[in-house]
Length: 284
Picture (cartoon, rainbow, N blue to C red):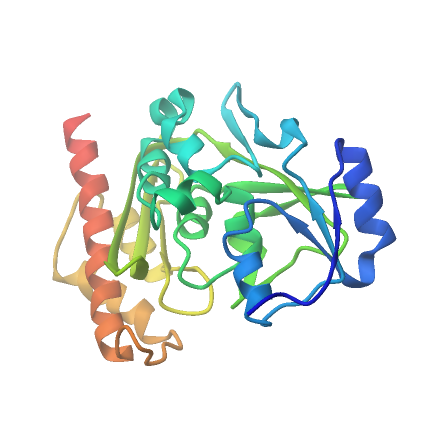
C-alpha cells in the first residue's frame, strides 16, 4: 500500500521547522528516520497532511557531554549512538542496546527521538532511558519544556508531546554506578525487557523498570524497595517482589507470547538485570 498524499517540508533550520509545525498544527508530524512512521502511513494506521523532515538540521544529531550530563540529539541514529565513544565510555548499556536494535537498516536510519515519539510498546530505549532518569527537551513556538522520560509515554503509540512540538534532545544525568538492560527477543521484537540502575550516591534509590510487556514502560517499586533494603542480596524474596509488581500489570496475549508466559519472561529479565548490576558492583 501507499500512503495517502501529503505535503513534504524540508526545513534547514530549527526555527523554520518550529514555524512549520505551528502553521500546520492540525495535521502535521515531524519526520526523522521514518522507519516506523512511514510504515504506519503506508498501512493507513496513521495519516498526516504535512510531514516536516528534520534530517537537514544538523544540531539535532549532536552528542555532547556537559559536566555530569550527557545530551543526545533526537536525530542521533541507533548506529551512531552505538558507535559514539562518549556514550560507550559513559553509558555502555545504552550503546550496547542501540547496537542490537532490530537490524542494520533500522539502526542506520532509525533515530532515538523517533523511537521515543512513536511510542511503540515493544521498543527498548524508552525503558532504559526511564531507568536512567533521563529528561526530554521539547520545543515549539511557545518555547522549550522538559519532560521526564519516565512520564513521556502514556500508552501504546501515545505520548505527552503536543502536536506542534519537536523533540530536541535527551539529557541523561551521569549518576549511575551500575546499569544493565536485559531482554528476550522473538524475531526482531522484544517480548520482555528490564533495566536496573544503581546510583553512585549510596542514598539514592535504585531504579528498576520493565518494558515491552504492557502499553508503556513501568517502574517496579517493590523490586526497587527490596534492592534498596537488601543491597547485593539475590534471594527468593527479590523474585517475589518482582512477581508482585508484575502481577498488577495488564498484560494481554498476542502472537508472540501468552500473557502468562510474558509475565514469566518479565520476571526473568528483571532478575537478570538486577543480578548484573550487583555483579558490576562487586567487580568495582
